[in-house]
Amino acid sequence: MKSKKAAFITLGCKVNTAETEGMKKLFRDAGYEIVPESEFADVYIVNTCTVTNMGDRKSRHMLRRASKLNPDGVIAAVGCFAQVSPDEAAKIEGVNLVVGNNMKHNIVELVEKVKENGPQKYVNERKELSDFEELPIETYDDHTRAFIKIQDGCDQFCSYCIIPYARGPVRSRGIPEIIKEAEALIQRGFKEIVLTGIHLSSYGVKEGTGLGELIRELHKVDGLERIRLGSLEPMFLSQDFVNGMETLPKLCPHFHISLQSGCGATLKRMNRKYTPEDYRNIVKRLREKVPDVTVTTDIMVGFPGETEEEFRESYEFCKEIGFLWIHVFKYSPRKGTPAARYPSQIDATVKEHRSKIMIELAEEMKRNVLASFIGREMPVLIEQPAGENSDDMEGHTPNYLPVVVRTERENAGEIINVRLDSVEGLSLRGIAL
Image (cartoon, rainbow, N blue to C red):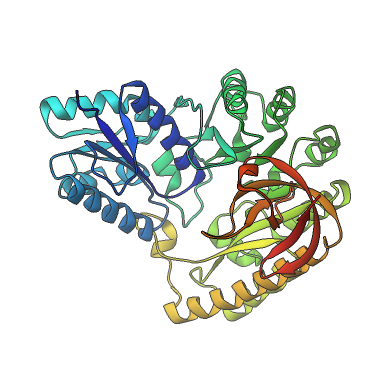
């Protein structure tokens, strides 16, 4: 009997990555063979993104591409684009299944319904997205660190962001379920897990727990060597949490703390809930208490109304902080958000210019941070070859310094000690000890 085949295309964030792995497990358990997205399959699952208009465009493009690979197959639009624009998704040629968020756990049964009854659409309203959707994961394809989704939803309503509508209200996963998944992943050989969520800082708030309690419980998992946190809101990093980090040796001293702008007036228009001064104090607190800590962030340029003075203020603030890395992105109006209707939209050429300037700063700061660790010996999680025919491997230290080192490919997934010798481009060159 010919085996059924399913292919997956994942767009967007690390939460989507985790959810795709959960859906793959469901299909494997149902007897499907998982094949690469470029191959013929009976079912194509496109886990979509809607965070920007570009995310929408990519989602539509990937759905059309899947349809061309098998015009008679089941083509499923799943996730955030499907949740926010279900009718638009359903109209794309070849798409015969639309599944919003919180319905992915039923994906195999929904695919079978399409086979029996034709096109289907399953999308809940935001208020109905109230329960955490369990999609357990046992392994990750092509990864040396494992992502565990612990939280979903967002109640912040930043003026530029559609995600509260796509993902629904804040909800959290139970600690026992997270521990069970972590133990299964460690059994598969993973040394590092990354805790991820849509608004990670909200973990456990409604349930009366919190990230600190979860991290303490994860420390008890034998074989787990590193716990890394996904993107955090600045105000999460309280004095109590930072003070408690010395009792959490498995927690990586790297924090991605979302900034968006270093200008107070811009932050106010964005409806962000902190000031540059708040952010400055949080980073100071971390650097005083946590050895070797590094901070990365996101910066948006060209937000509506951002004057040259406001951009300069943001630039100088970033320079003062001294980030390991800045993910720089140009503001693009997202239909359905307040910021898309703001006056004083910034010209594309201005946004491009500001982006270039901020990226140059990001690269300069990264080289400076990397140089400050030359001569140190640090553990590095070996992840992947540095190039197709390279004898070098790439990996990261606990504080997320990228390292290139000559070592065996069989060491992928292992943690080895490395002496950091020099800066090459935007990485450190190390020698395996």
